[in-house]
Image (cartoon, rainbow, N blue to C red; front, side, top):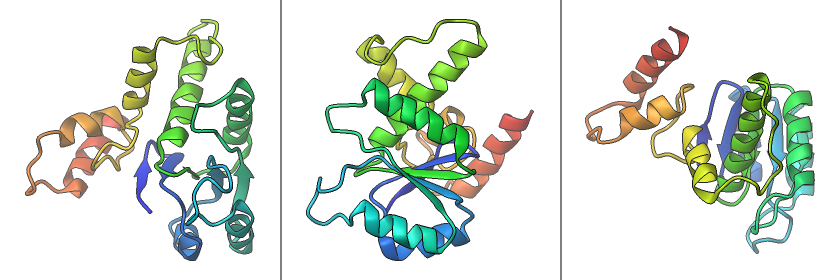
Length: 179
């Protein structure tokens, strides 16, 4: 299970291991969104098992399965509703974390464009390159990206040798994000 924080309220993960849900609770996660359809892989636990374990620890759960072919308009609407309604911080997962990161990126872009007074475009109307840049902007599965500042952390960790510590990079990006 690999976890990547995209910002202070939202984290993505690869497939959750049921026996690690207690650790997620101890780490302060208050909500989990499953973006992986049941039965996608032979080794994956069912959402029902994940939900039962999470509820035992008081973690709210939502099931918003997204096919490998991509998110539909209904998936995006359900995801936006979940982000708005669920307690933070939220951890969303799928097989690799990419579908969860893409949903978050599209949600974030739609909220930013409506704040600027633009009309949000429906899913599928963005050119491929723009969607890819948007996913990178939130640090989708970027190696070493565990800071609150997403893109900034991605830039700062590129080329950092093994001697650089993630902790010092995270502290620098937190300072940059708050200034």
